[in-house]
Length: 363
Image (cartoon, rainbow, N blue to C red; front, side, top):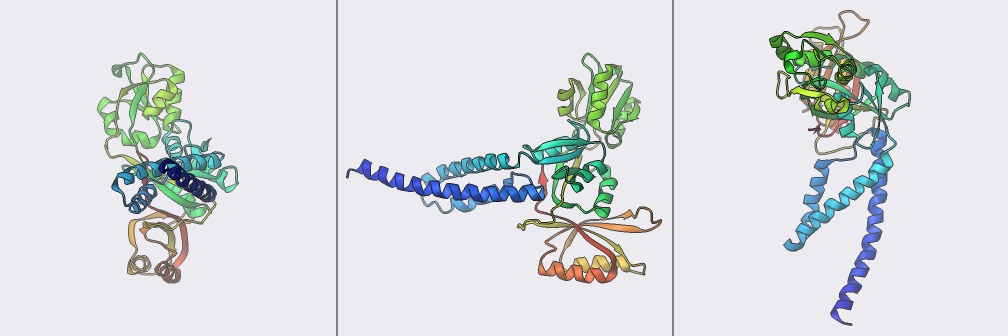
């Protein structure tokens, strides 16, 4: 047998093995897709992809071949993600607002192949998942400039859905008006209350009148429909394109690091274990001296770093409060189980509202 024939025979044998392994890989991807759909998790996981490529590349001894292997792995992962998209494309994702709103942008970035469904309020989007109309919902939980989104935190406290992921979206507000309008024409701005607050300095300096609307994209839509050159909306760049508006001024929010954190809620309380884990804990304390300090000390004593600790009033119970904690670590670990057991003694109410891996930027 000549050298060419021998090489081809080896290639044919390896190709057969690779075909079998490829089928095994995509069968595993199929199961991963089902799990992600159930938990409301996104398809892409850039951190894991890079980790896998780095680990597997070390198996290739030939440096010349290694570069080609990295390219092969990236193509394989792209194929796997497209296969996973086909499986999860029927996912129904609830969000509050209309097309073009920041919640829509966040939901689309997390679930690019999902079927995004608009609801008028946080409660309606949340209840759509509870009732089974949608598979999960994407709701804002905090803004770096204006603070927590209390209504959504209260849904965590009172509801049964579970947070499976947390994502940060940079917020860049723009002044949008109908085509032909000039910035000197503007007398009034319309937007969501949060957006107006985030652009308060800009609005005050120009002495604009303000009108609150349900969300930023709805405000842009109303400006487009009205055709009044004296009224501008404060909204995203994507919204301007969607409704045919001109951007009169970019990045008008007071903070240039303005970011909103969004959480994905689903009915599943299952969550994967990773190198970086975080959990959301909600609790109320017994009515006794030092109860809150005791709860906080228990969390710290078991080695869990609290990134967030804040209080919220319990609705319909005057002067009663519950506490919201985001902490690093896995509450399902042995240390976490011991922590929760000790907290149950000093807390009148205790609830794990979510578990997520490393927070992901949607920029």
